[in-house]
Image (cartoon, rainbow, N blue to C red; front, top):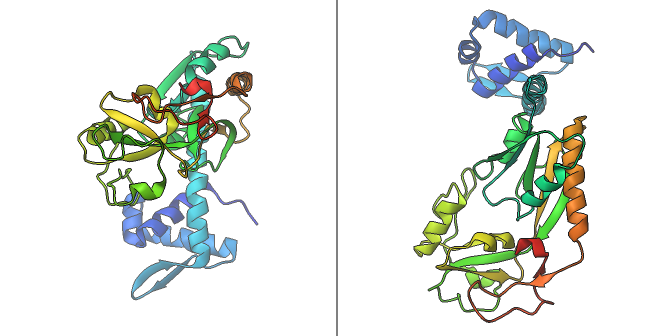
Length: 307
């Protein structure tokens, strides 16, 4: 079978997304007849029907659904490859690290310090993006490495190293009825208003960053269950209480799959070396920041770099 060209994929994706040849042609800046011929030729070369055309319009076949999904990824990968090549050829190269606000669990400062000692190190630019954007920036070739969170971020297409596992805490206003508890279970929070992140389902108010969320929690408009590293910069009027059956979150260092960048490899070595050096020591957190009651270390322990 002949190779499919990126131009053909772009034609098909436009038609598959619009489900209308006229609109797709307008989007592509071309006439409709050559677009229709190109899609027919693509179907003939692949030996499968991609679109069903009838008086009611255009719809995708099962093969068309697959090609749309895979074609989008392929076109995105080509764009990312071009962007990475352009960045690699810049006179003043740099390593771009992307993360959401407070998304490093206190690790990045130590990693950057260790990275400076690597022979292949480049100047580092740290980009703080909005929640949920970091994987996209890495996938698009706008960043070289990202600090992601499993299971919340999509790790497909990346090589990864797990850096830190965190348990969950409930962030509550200090005046909340549960704020004096030593620990909680998720059932204790049933009926509470929770934040809703952009693009995700939920009934609570939409929040776009942690600062906005913390303000709403302080005003008593919601509560949130978050990774325990949130304690590092907790507002005075809030408390964070361990949720014993809450989601376990892993801080993950991610970079493009099969990357051959020596600067990226050096950054990964620095991060893994830092984490390995700190393994094995744990310290108990207070049940709620600012409270005297402590959770036994056997119930809730974390690595000291979270303090």
